[in-house]
Picture 1 (cartoon, rainbow, N blue to C red):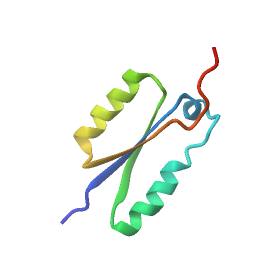
Picture 2: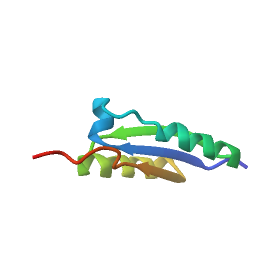
Picture 3: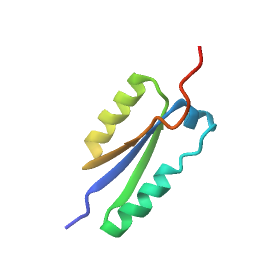
Length: 78
């Protein structure tokens, strides 16, 4: 029996700019591993709805489970 494919999507312009580091992938991976689950891929996208939608669609074709993390930064100022 093969283990399920797990992928991670991180959303946020602040992550893409390097203002905030993605520490959630490491945290999640460390908790999945003892459960017999291995994170296969992490995808990072900005805050554009179309980019997030596309990442979700692409991941849904490959993975059995998808973990999504976002909302890590401050809202944009106008």
